[in-house]
Image 1 (cartoon, one colour):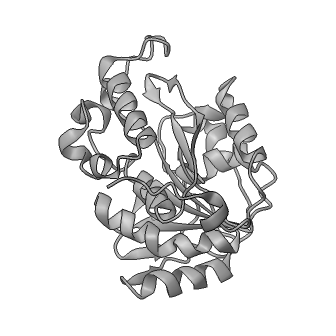
Image 2: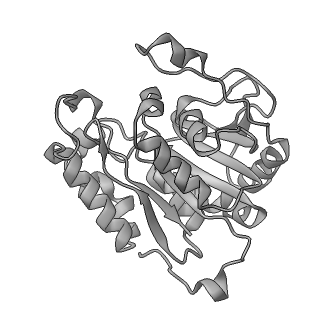
Length: 270
């Protein structure tokens, strides 16, 4: 199966938002001399969304769960960083109307739960601090009910109508995430083979719109055991793909390259 690249003029509403898959790094991303500017430029190229629906690698919970729609503390789900990173705030407005639409769209196909006390985790708020630093766009986070590529793809398809309502759907992960195998002394212009090979494979599959290969990544992707010892940072890609599958016109790669030897390659499905 290939991604359907139908003619944008015949299939795509002028109001339709793209879907995104991005690398969210870690809190020190905010201090990087390059990456925050790349994220900011990317956001600046987009039409301002009515709200953002975020699916982060850092929240797997079944059934699919809807996080807070009112002001609650962020989830500082990281360890060993300077204290200032635990003082970060991102007071984005809640999105109760979007939560209702998620219940309508997804609830017809799978169970939906509410976790009203859960705030945004760092897979959500770190990139958002770079992309919409004024925190003036409503944000809703939902969980991944499992890590199955096909199931998350179908969840993306269920959420796809939101694109015509001005909602930006973001899958937040990291295209390679072999934390046990990184060498912080190694330059990012010479990443280890496992990271470079997986990055190249994924980029090629997306460029060729080879959905079958992507969904079959456990058998086809090179160096998976090193690039993704756990697959939680890869599979948000399938939510973004599912939401885009029926009418994408182009696929962009706004960010590429490596950070601590990990691929920060990100995709925009229009």
